[in-house]
Image 1 (cartoon, rainbow, N blue to C red):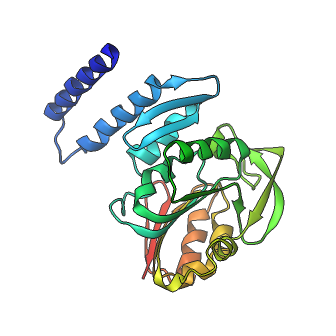
Image 2 (spheres, rainbow, N blue to C red):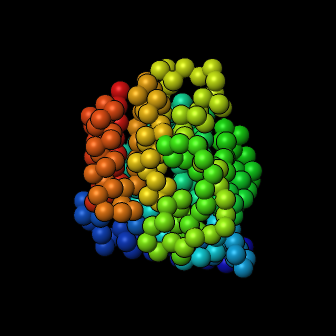
Amino acid sequence: MLGRTLLNKLFSILVNALNKLIHAKAISIMNITKKIYYFTLFFSGRKGKFLAYCKTPLGHLFIPYEDGSFYYIKEILVEEIYDRLWRNETFDLIIDIGAHVGIFTLKVAKRGRMILAFEPHPVNYLIFSKNVKYNMLNNVIPLRLALSDSPRVTYLYEGRFSGSASIKPLPGRHATSIKVQVDTLDNVVSKLYPNLNIKEISVFIKLDAEGSEVEILRGSSKLLATAKRIKISCASYHYQDEVIQVINFLKKIGFKKILVSRNNIVYAEKY
């Protein structure tokens, strides 16, 4: 208790000092204070050999105990790279493709009536399921499934960090014996929600699948073409020209408002 009180006091002193030193128009004090807060929570959390736990303002968070976790927290909760344009909007259906252990799902859980989250790696999926259970996210359906443009069974390639697994042999990945089921997003949505009128719902898709983004978009053509209101954040930096391929596909199926961030996140919307 004493340690936590001291930490809170030190945090308040630091925030006040930053407020005096930094001009609001030059640097967002909100991002700076959130960065300190989330990073403090992560490093002061309970750490096991392979798993770390921390309590965030969003809820309980179990996460792999590795250097990459620091990066995932930073980009999703601090920089908000996936939903910075639409952070206050709500949707009928939110789809998290490449959910890892569910940090983004946890972030948007209260903003979606229904949430589908896809994570093919078995260890990530177990941690993700734990996060869903501990936070009582009853509107979330976690699926241990990879997405692409056709159903099949394939193998995972793993990288240095837990969030870099892919069904593509990208540079820096090595082959594994982990088999995963692959399907299309259109198939999954039609199976889980057979009576859903896609033309009447709003959809938000966060897509970061380590190089399979274009194939996943192709396998989502029906949903992308018919949803009443749809917005997409698509990580498009996994190989050369991926961002161009993603933009060209989205334009082809009717997306007219498309923006690209400095780190090649494609933001697109269609009404």
